[in-house]
Length: 248
Image (cartoon, rainbow, N blue to C red):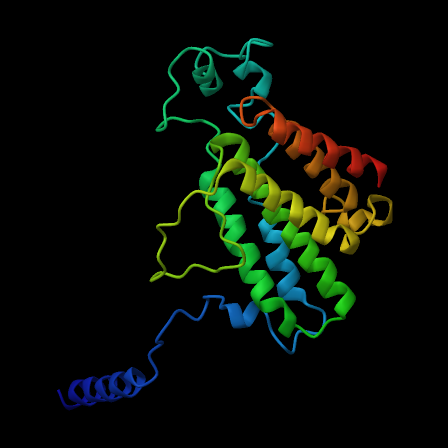
């Protein structure tokens, strides 16, 4: 009996002592201060964060149930009558069942890009690399805004703001022209800091480069020149801008 009381007392003492060392937050949780670390001279964690942003990009032209996006038009038919791509042509498409909804992923990219831009300067790497990483991230953000723009028209532009839980998220939609000008302005601002595609090594294949940024601007203007969005005056501005782009 005495042994049992001794063991129970010992367990109680150990338990009370361990209470003082309880975790106040999960130790496996990665904090922003862990990712953007002033002692990380190789920017290992920051680059991993950057590469993680790419994983949120739209995945290929057959992303809807394996059918190519042509099947959402009268150019092709889906491989199965049950394919959700049929919603675009059979009258069943609604805001609830939209099979190519990219709202969440695009704004997740925008937020992560803004977090990156806000914190990357404390990582001890060269100014040249920081400029390149910032340009790369701004390209991803501009690309995400374009993905939103072509689906929904004018959308809320957040700039460099990182929204928090207590932030006011009732942000008005910008008009279509402002969104186009913002995306085009981002491309113009970063193109000098992006590498040529021919300079990218095999290990960096698929990362943003100058050609990708200029291609984004061309496609942006292609959509924006549509009479669906703009009148003749704005189309004339776009044609002049596109001419300068090709003259570059």
